Length: 191
Image (cartoon, rainbow, N blue to C red; front, side, top):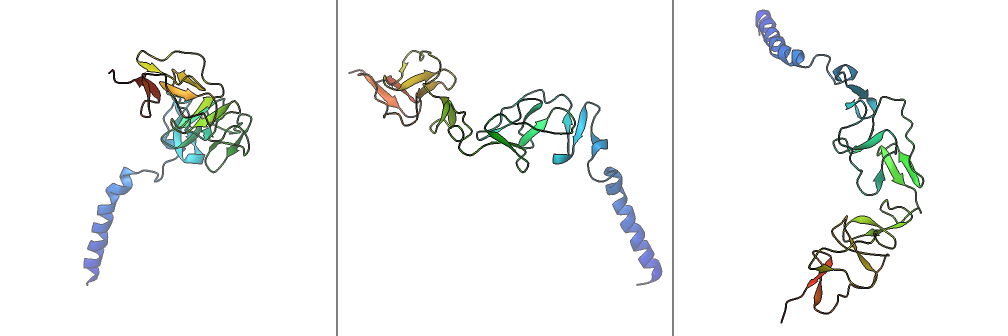
């Protein structure tokens, strides 16, 4: 290969790469990429909206966010601050900040597990925490009932929930039958 051929090959290579370099000025994202209403969040290498997101999402079970100036980010799968640092996240009682998962995690031995508060327990069928003693008194919609012993209607979950962990098997009134799919007693077939 001659010198001229090599020079032409290098020139063509540089010319081909030039649009790629121009398309990403400055290379990696950074503080200069944030809009006026955003700030750079170094911990996750992203821009966040000042004042927090418009929609404040609750974290998934077993996780919590510091109560002030933080909320859950589905996009980043962690808690994010509303404003630029310094960041000193303070979790609720019985929770500790986890720098690896960037959220509050339940301290061992507190509550009922799965991130439930001390006055709650985990209800596996609905994958949620239920208040001990059941929810505030509310009545099921027509054509639905709750078992008379140790179960009550949860308007929030639209089903019957136990009032404490390990309830007796649901037993419905005569003429009604337990529906595992709707978690309530439904009218049985009329004979």
